[in-house]
Image (cartoon, rainbow, N blue to C red; front, top):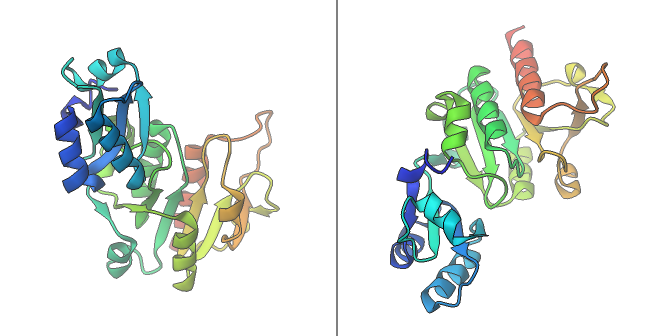
Length: 248
């Protein structure tokens, strides 16, 4: 994974600090060495936390692997080449008469994110919305799993899931969350109007706080022995049900 995105890494204390000061929105994640006693490293850590950027610690060998060089000085920043949109951008120029949005809360597997972006593009969704500081960064693995769809699908980043759902509900969107314990079957949900499909993280699902701002929860029935479906599979089923209803 790191070999694929080596051209999207900034390393070295001065270089990363300058990136933080001038282009923080381009940073997907920062990796630090375990010992951050150096004053400049401390400054980077404090700045990253203040900006609420995703960060993690790594051993020196891992930092060398990420940077492709031993001259990383204890810090590497993964940057993205993706152009992010605001929700206002998307709603000002919707793809559909009744917009269709997919919101992902904290997905950790980049292959799931890429697969959902690919299906969202195939189903002509208007945008995929990610939450800042939650989940995997939009990196090379996401690009690869999307099979080129990332170049066509509009990706938004928002600071708060709850405020985003409030904002969309005020604009007459109906918000549906996927929940395997829901009573409403996904085929019985009205997905023809302005719709938000919300999917939670692998394993933990959607946060209880976010659930309060959903109009309804829907389930995809399971007849076999497995307990649940992969989140990207669930997203695909809901997206194509929305497309089916809109084509009727």
